[in-house]
Image (cartoon, rainbow, N blue to C red):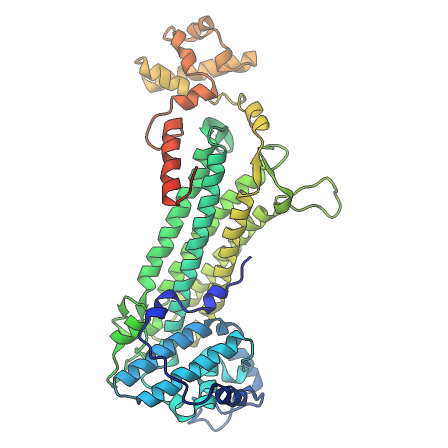
Length: 503
């Protein structure tokens, strides 16, 4: 699976943000050398420690740190700090010189992190304090002004919304890739008829493209759910401070616009308390995971010897350590299994949030890891599902040999009688008796002679054979959204155009 490097890069809208790009006020080499100061491993006074006489114990420090996982937010933390520093300068709360030193220092820190030179310190607790303390080491007093009219409460909420926004974009991109793989597979097997199942029993014939598009459609709803979630989370908490806002003359609309948000959040308490956006995000991921699990289940079944309908290539299969003949569709089994993990991440966060009072509580530190895990897992599931779709072959001979069993044309025969004016319930009974007759003779409906059919109902005429057999049954489906050839062709055309593919 591709790494989550996209999550450590600025989101696209930030590139157009009106941030000054000053000439470094210290030579780059000097800034880099100053940065070595923050690499000391000795415990230092907390940035919040003014009223405290004693430092926290090692056990407390180890238990409360979050830098081991929230450093994934570093890029978004730097982006948010750049916007905040620019706003403070515009509002006269810091000087332009302070702003320029802060922005240049943040650039140096970003470079150090991306080159793997930055040392993350647990005694600095989290990503926010690590970057702020390192900035202070780099540029001195100006860095101490950066936290003006800002709390870690609104800072982390802002960073997290930016991260989730980028994650949603990446997941939707992978959904599109899986949809494209399924549509291409459908085009490749455009006229293949397969058994359709209800209750895991053979029901009616369907075109394979119709079945594959039945996975493309819910994936589209998954993408739309995520995009809806993105729209709702795209409001800026920055400037809400700890919970009550500030008496300083900040401009929250400026920072919101600079960061690509729709606007600032209206209520400062809600801004630092809200985790609805995370719950909605993980809920959308969980629904997607369920859809992928169902796809995985079907392909695992169809790859079995009992079905034999699909043949995965060696490149997406594994073997057995003891049984040399085995060829297992392990990737899709893991897709099925990992859905439980994504659902578990949602449940963890629901339980975390259910009893929290307003406003910010330290419990909310625990919201990051389930989200990071959910995103990593769902992206892997989507990616490997697309890979699997690109590396399977449908065993057409096996499928065709299997089609006669199950009297799949029985419902089409009932439709024939309805067209002859017979009430549906009566038609249902007539066809049921016809199927029972076939079972006693061990034959198919299309094998019955006209006289045999008329012995069951005189309504049958010679045109009945235009409705019998799976190929003719398919031709008789005509309702919108059905598995009829013309309808499925239209569905394929729609998805080919939407996904910008070609036949």
